[in-house]
Length: 206
Image: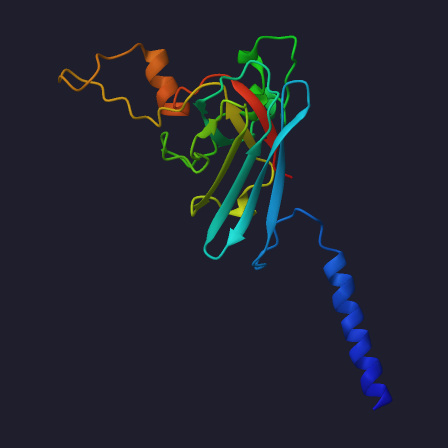
């Protein structure tokens, strides 16, 4: 009996040590409660919000909180919200921005939207619902998606944009309920990003 108790205690200790070795915030394959938390920062590197991705059965639950105090951001307005690929070292790595430079140059290091070959906006893997920033300058959102696999997130960058996302919904044509064709820059921006404008906040998934 004494030997049996010692063996049981040894097994329990090994299990406890294994649990402690799992890093906080890392998505673990097969773990029902696996999650990762991303800190969103402005161009000066100040934390302005968080995004949590968590396994929820066959889906991923996303919780977003953006705090007030973001200079220059439109309030009582929608803002594009996406996961970017962050996969081209030639443009830099991670969330690189200089607050002294124009906002159109911020976080270009995050590259384009995370997507598979041939996907257009709003069918990208990284396309998410827009965030409504309230008149108080804060935003909260919670949604569930089956587009996002936690195992594929590390290294990606989450971006909040300055403008609204049109989700590629710009009917172009000659009918009364359609628009005249825009210039190639405008149509390309719609196909690539929903024409959501400058990148205001950025956070890399660790």
